[in-house]
Amino acid sequence: MALVINNNLMAMNASRNLGSHFSALETSTRRLSSGLRISQASDDAAGLAVRELMRADVTALQQGIRNANDAISLIQTADGALGVIDEKLIRMKELAMQASTGTYSSDQRLIIDSEYQAMASEITRIANSTDFNGIYLLNGNLSDATHSGSGLVSTGKLKVHFGTGNDSAEDYYYIQIDTSTASALGVGLAAASGNSGRSISTQALAQASLSALQDAIVSKDKIRANLGALQNRLENTVQVLEIQAENVQAAESRISDVDVATEMTEFVKNQILTQAAVSMLSQANSLPRMALSLIGG
Image (spheres, rainbow, N blue to C red):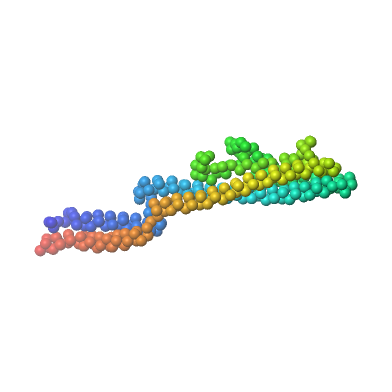
């Protein structure tokens, strides 16, 4: 190669190599400092698109887990209230049995009936006051078989949405809770006219109310059994969602996260190459001075 001073090709070559190695060193530094293999679209355009979709799915699944857990808490709230209603119905049946025997006078039966009616009123109060996050659970608001979420306030049975899409077979199901007031259960003065569980003020009424109370207890048990089945289903759903979120997160990690050991090897290599390129650029820049010695000679 000729000795020239206008174009220092060796310095140009060293400078180009320095730029290439320094750019690779910058990339390794960025990856190691962020922990991400893909921190910008130029790192892996296709990988970035896949990663963002997976991140969206993971976020949605985690919210779905919270939704399902909230629904479990709602069911437990309703079941706890129904447990208290259960105690009231059992006490009412005990009072009906007491009033059914002939050893009590009419005045005493009226006293027994007053407690009976108080229990019925308490059942209605519990049903009308039991709510979760402002959603009333036992007053009949969730008893309608048709759900509508088109308004600001949803009506009918309650939808629990936990999946990432909107497929009724995969992403949500409903919680439907029948009315648990005394009138709905057919006991107390609030029950429909002619219902045998309205009063126990006479021996005949008390005896007739026993079957009505039995039916009320069965109706309440059906509501609780349905809630228990839904709670078990939701708990299983949470387990599946947690596994699904974990696996999607692992897949996203394999695409997005940096392998520190491999990247550290690249970092050290690029660091050495950058240092060597800087040294050689310095040497290449000094070569044109050799021409000066010839000119001076």
